Every structure is written in C-alpha cells, then in structure tokens.
Image 1 (tube, rainbow, N blue to C red):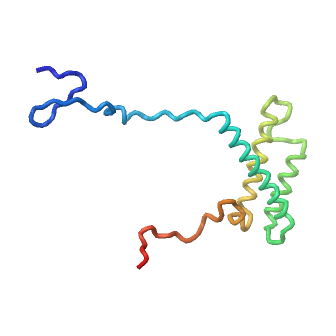
Image 2 (tube, one colour):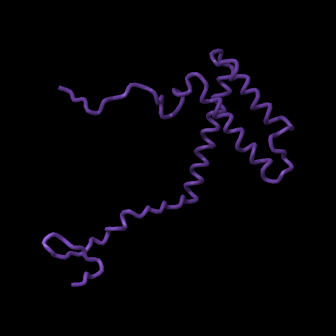
Image 3 (cartoon, rainbow, N blue to C red):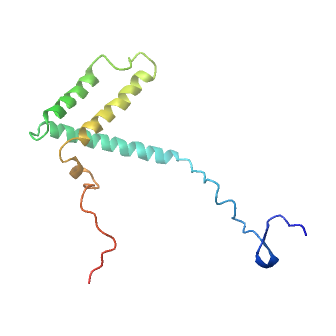
Length: 139
C-alpha cells in the first residue's frame, strides 16, 4: 500500500496525516527589517545619551575626585576636535567627516564609563548589587 504525501505511519499500522506545522518549525525565522522610524528613534536616543555624557564630563572635569588621567583624556578629546590633524584627513570625501562623527562619541562614552560613580548616574541605576534568590519564600 502506498503512502499518501503528508502521511506518517503510526503504531498498529494506522496512518495519520502530519500536522501542517511539522517541518516548518526548524526553519529559521526571518527577522523583520528595522523600520525607518525605529532607526530615527535609536539615533535620537544616542544623541541624547551623548549630550548627557558631555554634561557629565564637564562636571567631572571640575570635580576633585576625578582621576588626573581621565582629565587628561578629556583634554585630549577636545584637542583632537580642534586640531587640524585627523586620523583620516578631511579632504577625503565622506570618510574625513565620518571618522570625527564616530571617534568623538566613542571617546566621550569611553571616558564617561570610567568616571567614579558613573553607574549611579545611569537612568536605569547601578547594575551591580545583591542578587535576589527567586526561590526564597516568606514564612
């Protein structure tokens, strides 16, 4: 006896049809493309974070608790911005400007993360802390 397409053999010699979803579960799901509005939102969120980090660096520069090497790094970033010498010269189309748009925010974020007390200034609060056991029950 021939097996019809989509049938499987069950115990006792009976035949049954495969569920329609069988076989399709193993295929990777395609990610939905990010919409233009989501890209704009992510860019605005990053710009707001950059602004907040600049304000934080300005205040930290005058704070006596900030290490001297971080203050030197802050001065180095400002010197790189105003300096006529760049890693990629400005006369190279597109790349001359893009290196500044990438390097400056990365340097500002790198310095801000190393400031003492940076974790407490984050909107989501400090990430380190006591771990709460989820199996604990009150009596």
